[in-house]
Length: 430
Ligand code: PMP
Image (tube, rainbow, N blue to C red; front, side, top):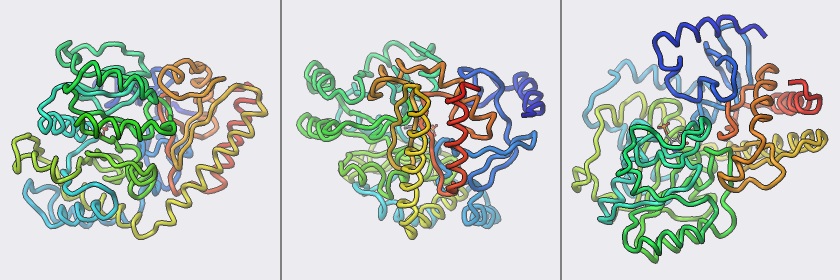
């Protein structure tokens, strides 16, 4: 495959962007090789600057649930742009977007729009602290909640990919309030709560984790956390930046039938525009400024282009619920196909999957938390990644990321992916 233009651009990019990129995992540093520079995308396909086509399993890390350049969204943005790209003042569209979101997801009386998943999680944590008057919180090893200081302790995604143990610049003082437990280990959380009685403001979790590969909550885990939070007056925060509007219209809350106190959103909620949001019950949300004194603000929050993109995509999802059933079928089909060819290969593997989130770990034991994800053969994954890329399949460049399916994927695309895996892994011809 010719990637000479991408190589040229990567050399040039490194002269003016740190590591040649604006977000670390994009640099392919851990998998090796050269990042692909993209030109355009349509539906399930990406096209790079050298004219190569790829089937996309990143989908901008989640937002493009209908595939790329989804026409209703593109048209709505174009039309809206004619009325100005930003006001920094209230618009009716913000109310309509909030009303739409409230009609789709449980437990949201009030919602505040921000511009990224990081901001959503950072603000939800501040709110939980302000509401409870407590400082500490619990997160799970291998979960990623954005790059705010407090969350960069035992974090997943790029922090895990690059094996960064301590992030320079995050002070020990800040990290001291971040307590961590292994994912799926309810007893460890109970112990932390007992040791820090009346000091824990929040437990934040990816209800289905996607930042150490895809990892599912085991039966009783989230239910146990919910009960514990109720008993101890702890705010239970679902980070639904990945799972929101993806695992179901109402996200993981709906799908897993667990109520969160605060929920954070990103990705699908903005249809690929820079959007995040946090919301919850009035009782907690009333503490956010200007209702209360927990301060949070944003020049571009509720930006008209971001709102119209999200509003258009979410309305489409709401009025076409069959999309979720079809995403489910696509996920199941891919899982079954991969399972079959990987079994034939004799290579130990684990596929974790829920709906349109899926990942493959090359491991001989179940992958249920960060330790088991880290003990998989990730060197083999890196070779698998490059073998797939060479065959026109664009997977996330790290075993510590979930793959995201879009509704634009056809059966032929899924078959091509399964076939590529077969050739790749069975023959060892990376
Ligand atoms: N939470 C989760 C679960 C995420 O996956 C991410 C990003 N991958 C974030 C928060 C941060 O979102 P953003 O990159 O938009 O700041």
